[in-house]
Picture 1 (tube, one colour):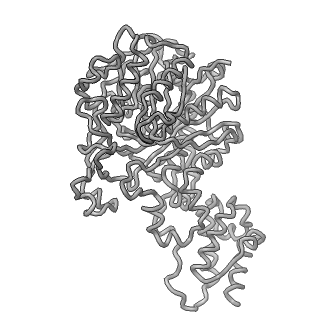
Picture 2 (cartoon, rainbow, N blue to C red):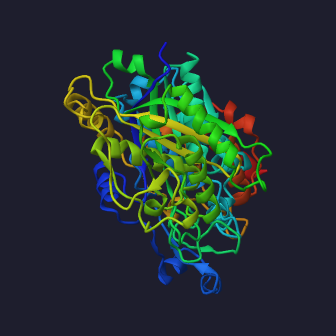
Length: 565
């Protein structure tokens, strides 16, 4: 069994865009997606003026133009679930479905297959002192929505534990389903875990990645002396003037298979993971969140040993490169320690000045930057870089002010992801050509049949319905003692059920004759329904009674009986 792992599909949503060609063009342009956030945007996002007018508030960020309403692959997710669920879960799900389609796998073809999912979602690194989340900014402040929710569905929709499980459930995937959270190295740690599972033979296909979004989605941050965030709002990775990083949002997922399996099945191969290694810094750090020289050296050497390559085999290393003076200096020093025997300087760069630091999804941005660079044949210089500081000018690792060209043939690139958790990851990536077109690079080799099939599959998925405010039910403002008509009870119940189950093909009259179990909803949904009836009409219903009812009409009978007592 070959230890090489092929990337056979991927889907991302980055501050540079969603379409691969759009992202490629933006990365090649040398521009930065880190921009000012206007006063009107901050106010619209609910950031108090007293907050963003502070001297230490930096109104700068990079954001992905993505919302659940603009998602491509959430057509079967109900409006209620869209409202309750952390958008980071939904972005991860959207990218998983998109990555499978990019790999030529339709939803019908993967359901029931032993495909794994490994990933994680944002840790709120750039949320500010309030640690805002979807729960605090949306659900907690919406009384009408809160009153119709059961606690378990809030937990499931807003806890990182359930992000990966949601994907496996939605897509019907029966392989390993593992949540990974290692702070900034989460995405690459997910890839590392996926590689271990593939090499063990546990499964033959795995989705791996991460997603991280701001809450609110248009905001800046409070700068704090000694922290990692830049007081100027500009990330200058590896530069003598570096003063910190700037946040970004986005996410992405790759589809991984064993190389031999991918070749045998004729998969388009975008890149090959030749080696990968992860490890903990242990106690060899000045403080818990400080960078560790020894830990970085260990994982880089471990990945090179796993790939069976040496220092002179690399054309480029995509560094973690956050733009923090200490972090960058430690990283360049570790690279110098590993690659010091090279005959030439080692070109090093970072995509964070271009896209921002994407929190747990940072490794996705780094991986895509290298995949597109290998396909393009060159990597643009690191944005905002002018010159190295004096301590690093004689070291082997040297950021360049010009593009780094990949030599013809198979070129190796290293990619580093270092987490504040102490988990560090490094992987070695190579180019791969499409087996059907030896003259083309992997990204150019997608067959027309695959594109048509994927497009047909995508077009067959309806757009997700918008979760308008007037679609949600709120409890009555008072209880006047006037009993609701049967039609009103039925209307409330039907709407609640439609929000949680896909019964758009049935009329209201037909829904009344269907049993609640036929809606495919679970006990959490039923608890939420009983909460609505309790709040609206002071009617106490037992969950088991609702499940036992033969039809929706029978449930309406139960409500009427309770009201009449």
